[in-house]
Length: 184
Image 1 (tube, helix red, strand yellow):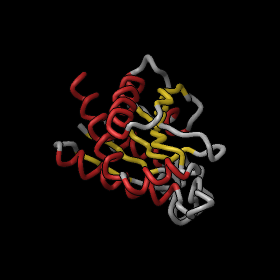
Image 2 (cartoon, rainbow, N blue to C red):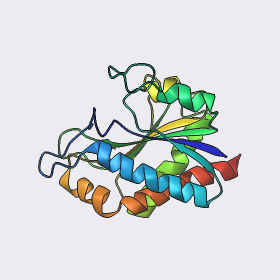
Image 3 (cartoon, rainbow, N blue to C red):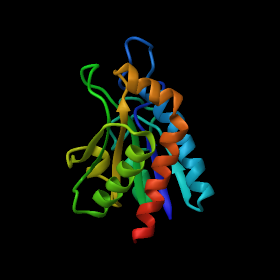
């Protein structure tokens, strides 16, 4: 199985959400977890490609970002697409959610597998699987695709999980992907 990993945002141009108390940046957390997910999936026998970029669908303002993530995943071609993120809202919200184009699709099944693995492994608050068809990485990919919101980076307790248990998040995401593969 070919898995395309897209750690959210960009460590140079777009840090994503930031915890104002610690300075922890979403792009850095996503990059670290993405590398670990890649490793665990490769150990499980998957072929993995990873790209972190602010150019999702020819929408980057930066000329050195000439590869569009969705187009690259489609051209490779990937069997599944996983975008890794940290949520943010009001400093009190907590938990994990996985977004997909449609819950009744293969992407929805993939989202449920990943959501279950994270919640059961890390005991995060289960915010469920959410349909988000307007998201670029779900709308412009040709394979089952998900966007994983691991935890809320602006909540100090969730931020501590993101830093102290990043390996557990990576293992859970990788297990969710391989669980989905077994269902095929």
